[in-house]
Image 1 (cartoon, rainbow, N blue to C red):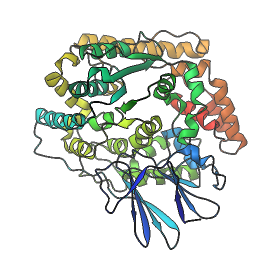
Image 2 (cartoon, rainbow, N blue to C red):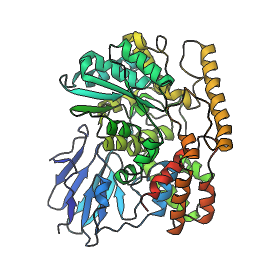
Image 3 (tube, rainbow, N blue to C red):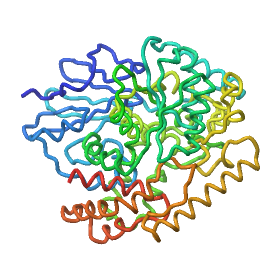
Image 4 (cartoon, rainbow, N blue to C red):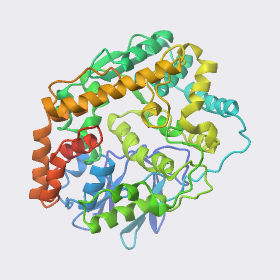
Length: 508
């Protein structure tokens, strides 16, 4: 057997020189080593493991991993808890002791003589502020020009399918598509638990204003998540929870042969969702993961130390003079989006239309006070696509749920506060009703897309307890930890983690 094997389904190209602007996997061969590069967005995930004969096996699809009998599949307890608490393994860690993953903007270097390998970053994402961008209008024009360049290169004869929400990101993507792609070549869909959702109302309004057919509504039910238990844990190696199956569920239920699925993923990070002004001055040793673990008392000090060690590797090359508003924004742009959004897009076989090095570099160079809270999108819509701006068509934006903005981006402050407090009231009322009725009685909440909390109480509590029981039997979880995770949370915090546990239970 050769010292390494790249499985057949891995898409890569052999090159003489690495090009950071070219997305995908690039491989450089020399007499002494092999260098395998990914792009800054990790548009193609790559994993590496050793088989029992010391051969290296490199793969992209985790489903292949489960078919290879010669690979040790021992669970990594640290990776298990990183996935539960943070949604993915940190840095190179995965669910398995014998498998590592490539972080974004990294390379695997294989030494041909020793048959050993290293994984390291080739680029640190540190981008300085461009001081020549001295106004919001100038910053917005620069973003408009780069988005226009991206969409102008689309194949006008190709058919596209895209998820359409009530938010700003999908409407600005559709606005640019409307400039270059015939209306009949674009199919839209919106997912949710009920057609009366505001998100679907706004999606329909935007589509109509731009001359598109009404988006298909895809209803999410408990069966959507039940089906996902049969495929999503295996496809992601446990790193994508079953409650993120919505688009895969739509694609499974709809015949879309000949359509290219395009995704807005990464837009939140690029456009400034996690960007706040003024800039924070923080220590790497006090990063988000460390702060989170301060409140976790059921993990051993050994596991905590390993998680903290992994987290510091994410920030080790971070420079304070770079133009990020916080360590949180740096983490969101360099770690979380690649491990979650880009990975999910890969599994969905979606094209990440905003995965552009030039766009990334430009947006991070924009002064923080102009980039924060995605305000450049408002300027572009107000100036170039007035018919679908937030004054003419209301919207539900992710920035209205991050605890920073003053409420929904609606026409006036009174309306905004009314909508915001109505949303909060419904959430709190349902938080009381869930444990009392085991999820069978809930007030209709038009502001939510899914009813994951309700379904967890009503339909998946036994699945959760069964999964946790498996973890105890295999020594991954203690009985005390099982008691904690068997208990259902009153609020949404902790719900996603429990769906993650249900999925991981399918791999044990």
